Image (cartoon, helix red, strand yellow):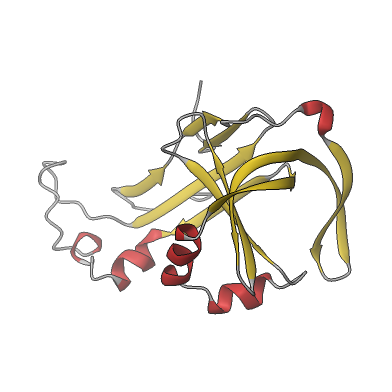
Length: 182
């Protein structure tokens, strides 16, 4: 969380750990370094994972391309949504919704594609308290909270947070939270 809540009796923390191998592993031999265009006029040298000519679940419309990369346990997949317009992510995010996402995923068809994806590490830190309150979950944050099932003392939740780190590799994906000790 980055800070301790002074006087806090309880914190609601959500963390996830997920590690899985890709159904089709990316070959380290086919990786290469090149520029990644992350904002207009801004580039960064990164390592790309590369794969040519495999049948993959793919769809596109006028605004975006979608690629689904299954894991070895094919019940799981990473779905990548890419705007067709370079630097068009903000524009795409402004108009995309759950219906559009579901529609694109329903349109996925096996297609022979060439894939070039930067190796990535993504971090997220979400304040769940604000989201929970917006959904009407308010009682646990007030002095009248009934959390008697987890404590004999009267307590309330001071903060609620979700942190995740996503890192992909040639052979697998690792999604873990930073405070885990091995």
